Image (cartoon, rainbow, N blue to C red; front, side, top):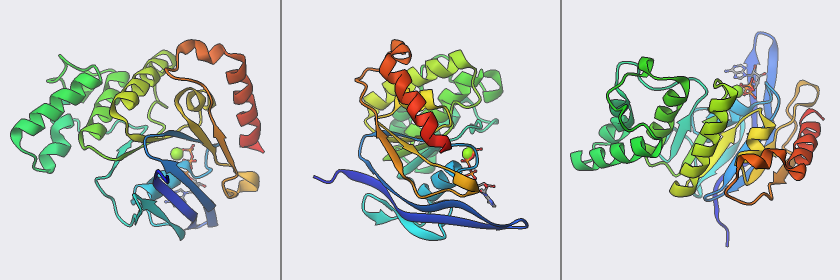
Length: 255
Ligand SMILES: Nc1ncnc2c1ncn2[C@@H]1O[C@H](COP(=O)(O)OP(=O)(O)OP(=O)(O)O)[C@@H](O)[C@H]1O
Ligand SMILES: [Mg+2]
């Protein structure tokens, strides 16, 4: 049975700049199965953020198309949720107001808004912090608000662009474990962009490597299935097979 939820079909993206035309993506094709955790890795400038913007419908590709649940994506839509590297919570709203923002905009009934807000604040471990403002939170806590906000909109697919890129190593590892727990509970498809190979291997079922030979992004040519069982535990990082796979991916990435 075809269980594809999202697919990129022969995507290319060219940008005209004062320095000439930049090829950010070239003939990229892949598909993602419903419920999977897919990581996309690649060196800086290989088009990862460009790709995520295209998948979200925020940017129109020069060539190719994106299908979400079989339909072409042409605009931003509520079936896709986003989490970025930068903190995205509204500074003038409390944690609770931030998490309830999407459901309020969607004009859900009051009781439903309250239920969703409570549920996702609990899911990310921010109970007791509902009335604080973003500036009163740590980096990890702010990221939790972003994740709760994204899930509260009930998207079918979550696109995350280096969400833990700005966090210190310990907080980052803690957030990875929490995200895996949330992913397991919610059963939603996640596309997770990172340039951290260890993070990609630790989280994903599948890693897609974007390459950047001679300044141009080649068509996607490496998809690695990740065989490690779940739940993924911190010890996995010291596993021989894990380390070998990391080395292999690092070689592929710069090839
Ligand atoms: N709006 C734009 N206009 C012109 N060029 C752009 C634009 N957005 C991206 N680019 C170019 O496209 C290429 C890919 O950029 P992108 O931000 O997608 O890379 P990335 O893989 O996300 O990098 P990083 O890991 O540093 O975040 C770069 O060469 C960049 O300069
Ligand atoms: Mg980027």
